[in-house]
Image (cartoon, rainbow, N blue to C red):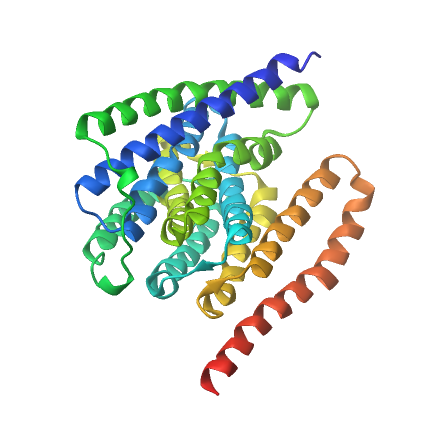
Length: 355
């Protein structure tokens, strides 16, 4: 089977999503600045909503077309990519200082939501009732973010004047970005589905890797640029906010759109990928606690963990005979060592602080 057309569609879809996400983020940020919303809240809500738009359109269209596997795996894969790659690479660019509200409120909330989604999916389906509950959680979270925006005024950073725009320009960026996101998501889903059929690979794996990485490009670029410009609030807030919205808003909408039958969840995702998504959030807890800074070393650890995840995905679908050996080494040796290093970093900092 000729896979060239599918590959072209995937690339074109990713490029359209990338361009649409950039315009959507720019327009959203400009409108938020016009309303005087603090930068950390912009990252957690407006920018994260804009950068999550590709995941939203891809998953929602996949649900409407009956491709439940791509709809759910795109969200789960994007969340794993966001925490490990986007956050890790951003910290490699420049160490990221973590605001106290992220440690006290947003990261524990993300962990709780991730565990709740895992529990909802454990029965093999995400029902429309579960989707509705997630949408209610979305509204509560956004209202809470806005109401607590000024509780730590000393943590608010200055806004770059280059981010400002007139209401007309901001609205135009939003409109064009939205159009590119709609078209790009349709092209990407069509190409990814065709590629999965042609390669004999499950749609779940395609969604966890190619589609997830493609739809996460806006988050990656936004956070890298924000980190380079010294806007750690936007870089970290974008990752945490996008990961939250992926589960609350996107899975919620997909669950409601699925109707009475609900979203079918692959058993492998319940037993492997959803737990990994939860564990990536758990791994961030000691990292965020250590001196309130994500260092380059810790960023490298996060990226390395994603490389392990990709290797496991490749071995599962190509060299099945080596999967069990790789998992044994990872579970018995690599992951415990990484956990000890991360915890030791946090404990050592607290010892120094109390000395």
